Figure (cartoon, rainbow over the protein chains, first blue to last red):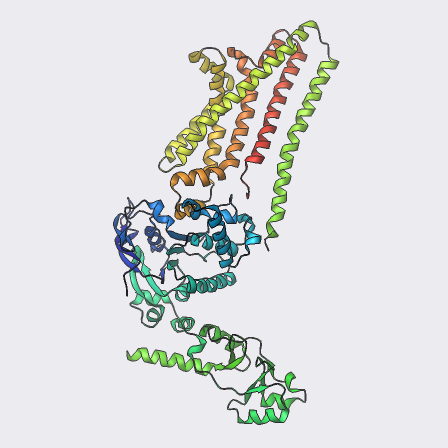
Amino acid sequence: MSEPLIRLENVSKSYPGTDAPAVGNLTLDVYEGEVLVLVGPSGCGKSTTLRLINRLIEPTGGRIYLHGEDVTDMDSSKLRRKIGYVIQQVGLFPHRTIAENIATVPKLLGWDKAKTSARVDELLELVSMDPAIYRDRYPKELSGGQAQRVGVARALAADPEVLLMDEPFGAIDPITRDRLQNEFLRLQQDLKKTIVFVTHDIDEAIKMGNRIAILREGSEIAQIDTPEVILSDPADEFVENFLGSGAILKGLTLKKVRDIELHDIPALEMPVMRDEALKVLENSPEKTAVLLDKNHRPLRWISEASLNRTTQPIEKSGKPITIDLQPEDTLQDALGVMLQSSVGMAVVVDRQGKYLGCCSIESLASLIISDSGGQAKS
Amino acid sequence: MTLVTHPKAQRESLAEKLDIIVTPIFAVLLAIIGMAVWLYSDIDDTTRSILAPEKIQGQLIDTIILGFASSALVVAIAIPIGIAVTRRGLPRVKTFLVDTLGLAQALPAYGLIVIFFSFMGSGIVTVIFALATFSLLPVLRNTIVGLEQVDQAVIEAGRGMGYTKRQVLLQIELPLAVPIIIAGIRTAIVINIGMAALAFLVGGGGLGETINSGLKLDRNPAILIGAVLVAILALVFDFLSAVAQRYLKPKGM
């Protein structure tokens, strides 16, 4: 890999009166454009490590480099203006409007009003909040999820290369958290920031990280690698325990629906005659077909049995298809949809909602088996 | 979606309204009592001369000056000390100060004025310092509490954005502490105006003179009217500080 953007070199932090250092002799490289997740049990020093990077906590030893430049002794306030910072409690300034909150760093850097104001609107739109509605509101009028969106916008205001995030979605309800995580990943695809992300939640780490550093006490790195490698090849017992049971299931979040082979379940396009349908079903290996509307959107599961059971028109027989998958969805999503589905399969559609094929539990299982089989050999 | 907070906001503004309505009502009631005493009791020439308008006017001005000067002195001393002891490394000083000043407030104001008189001599300055000592605690305590109740996450975010410690203090901590600090100042002003009635003891003037003359010459109406005037003045200043509190409160809170 290329030159790291952030480099911690033998960094340590100990507090007077305690024997064990909070962070002991940590060397860590963060590369441009990656999301590095620091994850570990509480009290392992991951948040301390994050604060050492922007020197909210001053290290007692070691050097910190940004872009190859030693920033250990630079004016820490100036350094922090170059680094975005998002914390779990958000910490919006309650006496300032949303716009003023977002404009914090631009104001510190002396941007002119027009540029700042344009940037505020741009950022609000980036985090899916309507500037016309939210600009002049105060933080107490926002929900937790909205507040953290503003928190992220504020951190991005002066377009810093580096973003430090300390459990940013930790205090948000699970449904909103999931949505914010997905939005964040989508944003990061465009922004390509260098992000150090702290969490205690291994599932979040796997979802968000390009690389994961699993830390044990004293911020000692137990393993640092891509989520795939960590899941399939944990370095030691500590990592294994931290991953917990079901590493295979967790691995499903890393793979997409497009990675597995789709089952070719025959499709019946409306309008279709009953005889025609029966003929197709007879030739179908699963004795099942997918009924599509005129625009190739899946409507219902049709089986031979269900068709024979009733004299109702074909568009009323079988079972309705309520959820579908897209190739970008994770296999974990796919598993959920399949388990809910009456036929043990899930339909896959493209962005326009057109039918592509089906995935089944068998194809998922064979993928998992071939994966773990491959590892056993290596 | 975001309208949830409105009921709370309404309740707050109702409490604020009461705050502003109740004080004038009391002041008016007191004024009516004063008028009734003036109109319906025996007012002889001695009482008339005690309550001579030009005398009362001078005493009112004295009382206001005493109240203002001592409160200004309190603000100038207590707020910087409050800021200093809430910075890191001074928690012990903080406890010591709050305890000591608690003691000063436990002393009778009368005694405090006499103590100051014993080394500063008579005059208005003595009274100002004595009153300031007496009313330092509410402002100091509220400054400390006001600064300490600022959400640590907000301070951390401010530091993390690149504010210097000074900028965090001036742009975040102090504005957010303003409502509580002003509440302390308000208490101090009311204490000071009330206690200024004792200024006459050491030649500091003020409405205490009217009350004192009434006592010495056994003229109950004069005592009553003097006391009513002190109370009305204290209420007026309480009202003015309530209005100030309302308008100086940062928006969005």
